[in-house]
Amino acid sequence: MAALLLAGCGGSAAPDPAASATPSVLVGLQPVQRGEAPEWLAGYGSAAPATGGSMTVSVPQPGQVARLAVTPGSVVRSGQLLAVFATDPSAVSAYDQAVTALTAARRQRATTAQLLTQQLATRDQLTQAGKAVADAQTALAALRQQGAGQRTRLLTAPFAGVVTAITAAQGDRTQPGAPLLTLARSGSIVATIGLDPALAVRVRPGQAARVWRLDGGTPLAGRVTRVDGLLNPRTRMVDVDLSVPAGAVLPNEALKGEIATGVAAGWAVPHAAVVTANGPPRVYQVAGGKARAVAVTVRLPGERVDIVEGALDSGRPLIVEGAYQVEDGAAVRTR
Image 1 (cartoon, rainbow, N blue to C red):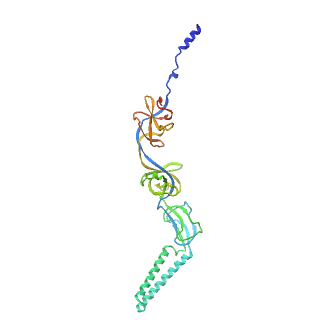
Image 2 (image 1 turned 90 degrees about the vertical axis):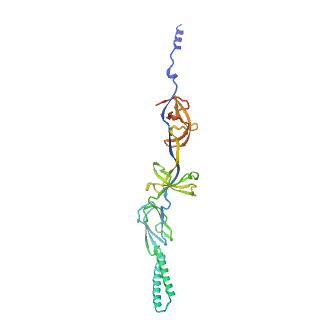
Image 3 (image 1 turned 180 degrees about the vertical axis):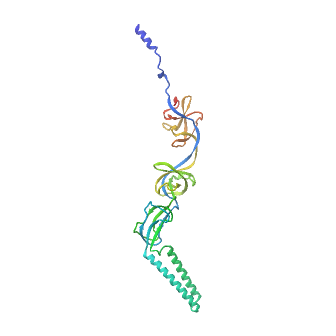
């Protein structure tokens, strides 16, 4: 009898409230709103002088590089010494011969003019003598302009800039017009990036851009200054130049460039709210204490905010924190 009484008492025990509670997920919510953001087209490249922003220094006479006063990467001011060049003796000799020829032509003209007064020469002979003087003057002026008469030439920087390349070593003997070094004008450095030809058609000069160093940091604001109309034969990409602030990057520095090619409009949602695992992209809104999945199309992904399109309800809060822990129809509780 006692055993029956004990059994009856055990069967009437109250149920545990915790065991009957509905499981829920703790989430963080945020209102939804529409917004827009620029669409960025990205490419990689390096810093280089802009077209027309560099100059190759050469000498139109044969000779020898007696001394180099700079090295690759040197920052120079306008008028600063770059190199000392010794003109070849043959060029100096040609100049001396031109000086002698002009002197002789002038003497011949004077003699002809005197003979004409004595009726021992004709006006045609005087005209020919005058032409010989003019030809000798022209030849000497050309040699003087080329610097043939200078046994030693001091090559100086025509503008402030950076020495980007030196193609002749100290002591080298060079031919007329041979490049000695290349100088890039200060403020002419641009970021040259390569773009896929199918995407480059969306780029125009004047569009806003930003330039990043590959190690991150703050982006440099700029604009598109040039879009090539042909493929780079080495990279098979279309080269695009982006302006950067003067002195902000170094020549040959590796860079990433982004160009604003348009504006994407839609729902502006936190990047953490867009769930892409185990199915198509979706977000979750809360209705009646439960998570409701809404399929979306990501128009513009971002580091913090994505622009998406979908049938979102502006009156329902969006799940941000905990979005990856819920499923459609799951009960939720807020922080």
